[in-house]
Image (cartoon, rainbow over all chains, first blue to last red; front, side):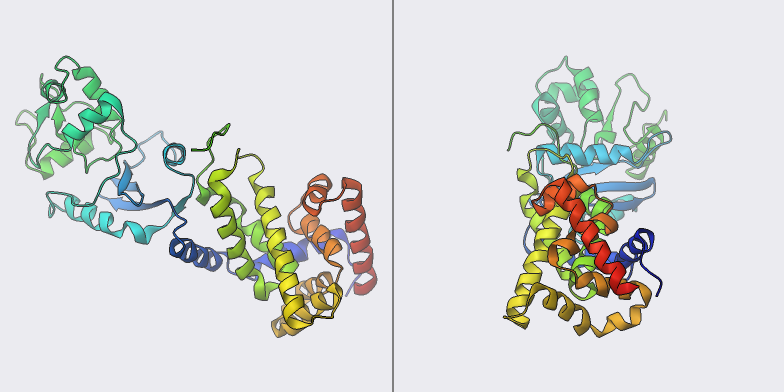
Length: 214
Length: 166
């Protein structure tokens, strides 16, 4: 063997890790972290007819569902969401798909039109104030029914706050489990939606609740 | 919740961004046979401590510091279990030779075998310098010595390696 120089040493030591399977080491770590109860927030991606969605859960329930990325937005969006959860709940956030299998199954069934009511527990810690009130009211709108922003504002206790209701819909951390797609403008039309108006229309159609003029 | 200056990134980011370096460091310092175990020990310890961190600066060297500690624990445990009277050098060499798979790793494995018989401080310094590209100042912090001493340890280690491998 030739005399060792810094370059070959570097190559050899860097190559040292390559012999071991990093993915296997990570999988072992995940299992151990789960076993020792060290994962405060688990997240994974879930396929939907509209694209890949992000789902995150805590020991209390599902805390965040995020829409598929739309044109012009990058994965940074999801990073931002996870960072927000880090701030509110805990930075012990790991990609742990198995823990989220129940919600994955329910979302699949919902998008196939086979499930009307979600039964997974929810963690409401990302909602607060009037927005929180409005979001709790939205959660009570039954499958296949719609309501106007104005009526929802009244139900949330502030009849004139329909603009704030619109903002609350936009900030809904749990779509489509909390069905903000069922809230429509009183003046007609489909209104805004975090996942885009096409997705809102498709969900209402799926539920047989699309207004006739649409 | 603990007051801190900035939000900590999700722990998964640490694993994705620095997992390879940590594993590389551990393979180089405890050998391929025990690296995975030390890797888990390292990240479990990090996960336990993570929410209490005051800030998210230098997470990579924070992780490598923990990995370094785990590697030392490992060498000590090995020393106690395998040969209570052996010197650190012998223990390191023993670990390397006991693992038969190393013989088949070829030149890279040979380099590791040589590195593993260096005295612990030189071995750590060399591995940190060449497996993780760490600056001498940081190596000094991790090994609890001055930047100059860290530079010297790397230099001494290299000199030995040159002698043995030539």
